[in-house]
Each structure stands twice: as C-alpha cells, then as structure tokens.
Image (tube, rainbow, N blue to C red; front, side, top):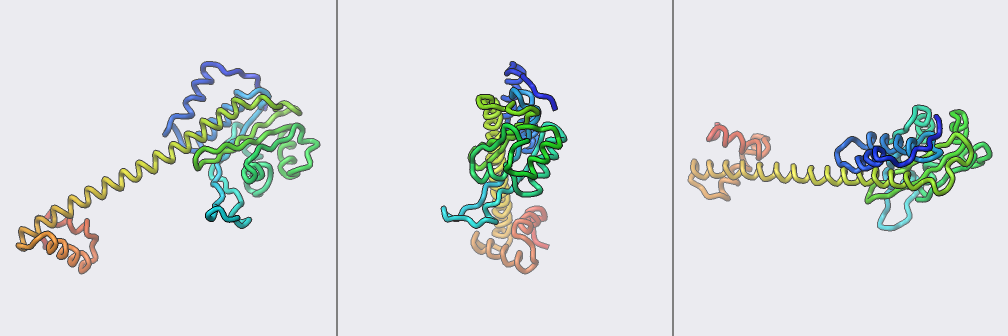
Length: 250
C-alpha cells in the first residue's frame, strides 16, 4: 500500500456520481467501489474497507439484550487483499473498532496504532500488514448502515479535515444500497400484484365457463371451483387454468 495525494478530478467526480446509480451492481460491488475510491481520493489513505451492517433489533424502544445488540455484518469489501484480511479477521472475532463504531454510532480511530492500547488483536493485525493509523466512520441512510475505514502507512497521515471525500463516498454508497432495496421491494410488490390480477382474471374466466356449463350463478360457480380444488388437492388458480385451457372439466 502507498498513500495517495489524489485530488477530486473530473473523472473521479464522475465515478463518485456513478455510485448513486440504482442497480449498477450488488451491495458488495458498491462497497468495493466505495473502498477503492476512498483509497484513491482521500489524502494520506493507503487503503480502505467498507462494511454494510444489519441494524440491531429494537423492541418498541425498550432496551435490547446484549446478544440482540451485537452488530451483524451483511457484506464487506476492501481496496487491497491485505486490508480485506484485516477486516475479515475482525469480523470473525466479533469485536474491535468496527463493532464499537456501529454500537456507539460514532467514529473511532488511532493516529498511531503502535501506541494504541485499545483493541489489541485488531491493532496487531494492522501492524503486521504495515498499517500505522486508521479511522472508521459510520453512515446511516434510511435502514442502511455503512462503515468506512481508512488506513494509513505513516502515523497521523489521516488527520482531521481530510474526510470530506470519505463522507461523500459513504453517503453515495449507502444511498444507493437504500434506494436499491426500496426499488427491489416496490418491484417485488408490483410483480405480486400483477400475478394476483392475472390469477383473478383466470379464475373469473373459469367461473364463466362453469356458469355456462352448469347453468348456475357466479357464487355457485366459485363454490364449485373451491370444492373441486379441495377434492383434487389442486390450487384454485391451477384448476382455473386447466378449465380455461380445456374449456371444461375432465
């Protein structure tokens, strides 16, 4: 890893804007682009990782028990393989700065992990991979929480005032995942409604056929459909499709 002094070029601005395109990629793909862009764009940042989290459950505002409060990572990505190892080891242990950031909803970091006394396991992992400082920040967007961790190879290389681009990347990335989730929910509902409309139309056609064949009214035809469905252990819609296709009952 080597630090970067990249400024916000037109190309970089375009790539950041593309983060906001719904359906451009999966959550992991979005997280990877966020981490990669952070490593390129944030001064002093030699590598980055991003994690999407499941929000801890609540019970009508009542306190939640510790096992329910434990943050659960849903997806993770990193700009470099060694950064991915640092992240994966911390997630596997279930403790460290990442988890504290999610639980406390506030940033954590260290200007020099060589003298950092918190999170000894995570600091050891970072030192072995050449990291000397880090900063982890959370970002909330609707029901999506994302953390972005920046890593530096020299002490204090991630000082204050250098995280505006990182905040922008997190905002774009989390907004994309939130919007994609909402889009998927709406699309799924629309498909279900369409299927319901089509099923109703098939059942109505089958009722019409029975009314004509049996000389009964709509209620009686529907009752007969239900009776045959239950007797033959066939779903009502499947039975209606068979009647419409056969123009009768065999």
